[in-house]
Image (cartoon, rainbow, N blue to C red; front, top):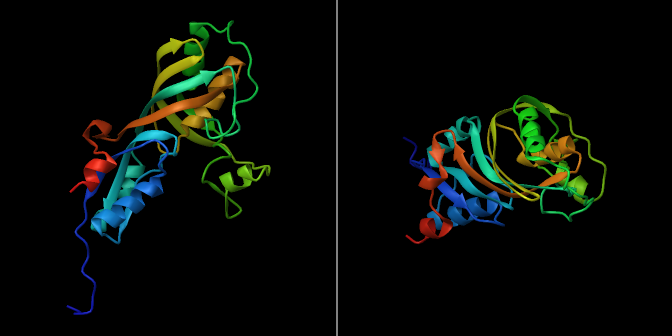
Length: 222
């Protein structure tokens, strides 16, 4: 054995309940510092305005990141219909407001049905996807026209849990690579009144549930 070799960290899998307004990298940075580990990464980004399950892997366990990313995801949250935003969520200003009084519960259920199954989805321009080597959101925030190609994703379940005027509560189970913000946009287009994602919580990745996750405070209080 080379006496100058750096010993490999044994590694662990951490389930974190990401707080609102933290980026996924904020969580990685915080736990890297607290746990004093060099090798750490997350298995699937959550937007700053989303909360819920973030899986972190350290040391040797980072080899499992891709397998976690490939697993189905479960989300709960709300769409607000009757307005849009450029980012399809509350990162940008609300615009294009219009009446939703003519929208029925059946219209809402029909829109959800049309967005269930294998669908073609165009990712949000405010996303980390690279276009010509540049993150799409950087161009979008600079006011540039960003064009992203559609791709196949699978929405396995799209349940409407409750309707409160313009606020639609949902649960979605979907494949890797599905953008819930894009579902919000497409949902609003199907209804003809626009919509944006007003809240989002990731509740499950594969067999791992947010109920088993720890908060940042719990993980750093040791």
